[in-house]
Amino acid sequence: SQELEQSPQSLIVQEGKNLTINCTSSKTLYGLYWYKQKYGEGLIFLMMLQKGGEEKSHEKITAKLDEKKQQSSLHITASQPSHAGIYLCGADLEGANSKLTFGKGITLSVRP
Amino acid sequence: NAGVTQTPKFQVLKTGQSMTLQCAQDMNHEYMSWYRQDPGMGLRLIHYSVGAGITDQGEVPNGYNVSRSTTEDFPLRLLSAAPSQTSVYFCASRRLVNTGELFFGEGSRLTVL
Image (cartoon, rainbow over the protein chains, first blue to last red):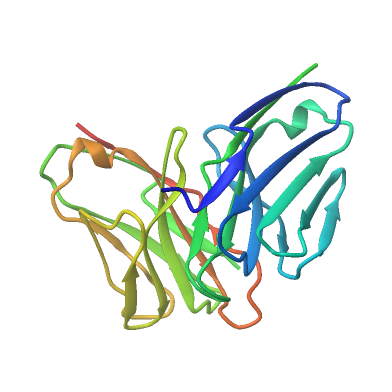
């Protein structure tokens, strides 16, 4: 079973459009990480959220951890081709500072 | 700082051969881990360690061994490689206190024929 569910599995958007992707767990998310990966390349750290209701932004990407700490959303404003890639969420599910579990990832394509 | 260094970057093995993927970090991180990445499967945790002398299993530990004799190094051993172990492997580390970013190595692409 997958402890972290990411949705949708894949997404194709037109350049300039906004989009939101999600990461959901039935367990408390003690620490939630978002990473981006270009095909065949390494992982780029986007941001980490720890507190319920916390929201962080980096350039045109905003991530939020809900109050119950069981879901995180990542929102991209005015998408660009450079946003294309695989977005992975990872979390501490067994308490703070425990092993980090990742979801299956979401593949984002941005059409020029 | 070099960060997390993995070697080799590419390796081709025959079924039944053994090999070790090396991982070293120079950030004095307590936590180190190994993941494998397969298409559509995300990152799956193989083994992890929260300090020298301490290791534990992740989601997919079968066929892999690890040890943590020093804070800096966390090698992953394949004792008898199988085609199902063809994958991209990532080593990662982070602090345990005031936990922050999980730092990843560049990945090691392993093919087992």
